[in-house]
Image 1 (cartoon, rainbow, N blue to C red):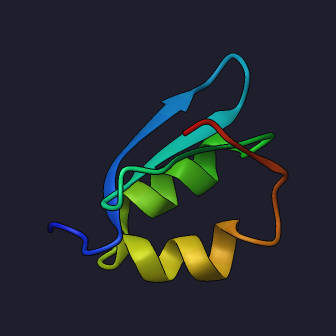
Image 2 (cartoon, helix red, strand yellow):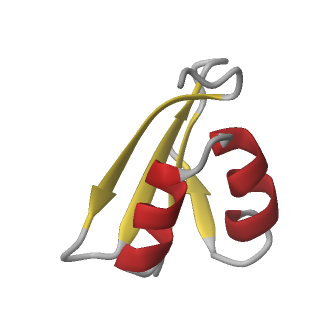
Length: 65
């Protein structure tokens, strides 16, 4: 299901980094995200809701763009 907030997401298992590409064009890397959290987000009906409740404020991040 398309998201109004998340345009795409990528997960690097070796660094446990979740990259979120927002529909606005902003790109953020969330650090030390466990693989099961990425899998849960991937399966979530609402990516934006999952991001706001389970990722933001819980993992360090870096704005890439």
